Amino acid sequence: MIFKKLLGLFEIGALLLAIGAASLANTVAAGDAAKHSQNRPVAQALPPAGIYKVDPDHTFAYFGARHHVVGLVRGRFDKVTGTLNVSPDPAACSVDIAVDVSSISTQVTERDQDLLSDAYFDVKRFPTMTYQGRGIRRASDGSWTMDGSLTLHGVTKVVPLTFNFNGPFSDVKPSRPARMAFHGTAAVKRVDFGMGARDNPGELGVLTTPDVDIEIDVEADAKAPTQ
Image 1 (tube, one colour):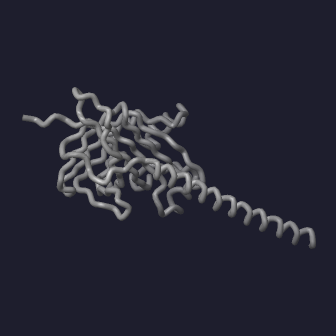
Image 2 (cartoon, one colour; image 1 turned 120 degrees about the vertical axis):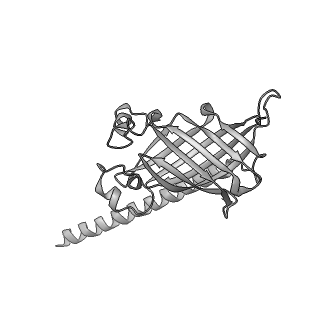
Image 3 (tube, helix red, strand yellow; image 1 turned 135 degrees about the vertical axis):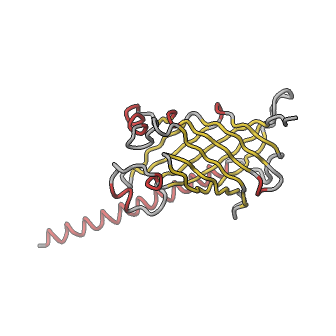
């Protein structure tokens, strides 16, 4: 009986220790994220009005998807194209982005092929993911928010995109167009887009918050105005 009580106390202590370690890890991670955010340049105003073409070679779309609730799989899409329309009127600003789903990479070929299958992205039927929106508003932290439409896996949902204008490039050659940099984040729940039916049921039924985080860094060049 005494041995069972001691064993029970040991299990409780181990559980409390694990919870404390997880809390500490989350605090450290949050601190690291805050430091990373603080190191990122943020411009107070939007770039000059005009249309900016996304540079695919310098644009990166990343995601982090929950794996059986407690794990996390990270990946990216290597082919992103589109345009950004900047207007003096925030309500007239717009975004039109296209992502080639077949360009997905999680650094594991077998997993990439699985994600492209009909169990997830079903790339043969839905080869492109798009994000389109018009109108932006200031967020409380000084960033901007757009309520654009994400079309993925044949489903379209309004997904808020929060972004910062990082500023213009200062070393652009006189013969080259002005270049601007942006950083954006969003979050979705895969089941809302009809994906992940084969996953652990806990991932689909237990989590009420988004289970996929999206991060995108964009470099875009000003397009010459049409005559």
